[in-house]
Length: 321
Image 1 (cartoon, rainbow, N blue to C red):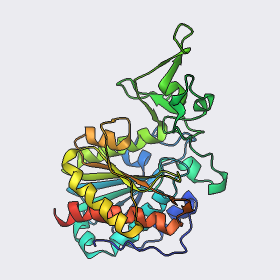
Image 2 (image 1 turned 180 degrees about the vertical axis):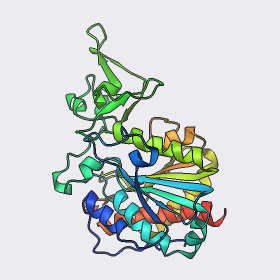
Image 3 (image 1 turned 120 degrees about the vertical axis):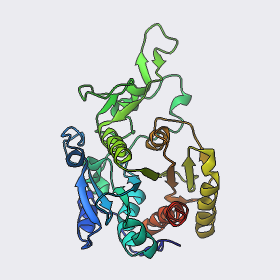
Image 4 (image 1 turned 60 degrees about the vertical axis):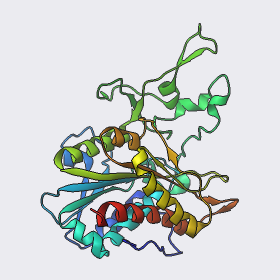
């Protein structure tokens, strides 16, 4: 074990400001809290509402030789990932093995990508659209029109088409995947090109900046949850060479929580992990499970799932470096 994975059973999920206050509370020279727009010096790299997207760099080195990039809070109702990202800071600082790595390397943590939604109390958030089964009907649901490229409501998305977004268009998930056409069989044509929300674009730019300025990105981890009663933890990965690492993650989570889904090898570039893989970086998406059958996991249990996965990744990429 590289980091402590046990979690206080009383852990509760707070707001984005609560997360930042906890990170700001660390009095350690390794902790550097920054914003994406300030770090890259590009004032467009903020949220849809114009709010800065904060992240923390953990390092003692003036010029780190490598980085690990961890993101969470990409969907507004996946609370275990952001809490795990915040919990991770203290656990890294308390780990002798990770302390040694921070003397020359760096860990970048984005605790919440969609900061506008996470700024609200959880009960006031507009939750993401669940697309499960949405395309099984001839005409896609009109509710798609209210969601961005990350399936959150209330956020702008921009079509890439191989060029940088200009932030002038406003496209929903419906617009991402369909265009209305009276002459088509169902009245619409399914599109192949990708969309990216403004927040997701900013975080992708951050990853590009880290890759350009470091000798190596050891791996990226994007922390998610699938809030469905028939779903259990799994890891999505993008390179067959990483199968053994993912299998070990699955075994450890299963040992603690008794059941997991099979892990998934994907080739979809339209995700943050897919984007990282396209840059030549080992990339993982952890899909936590808020439910165990019909019982809801506590926040502590949901966070522990993520920390176990991250601990195994640190074991493979830091201690074996």
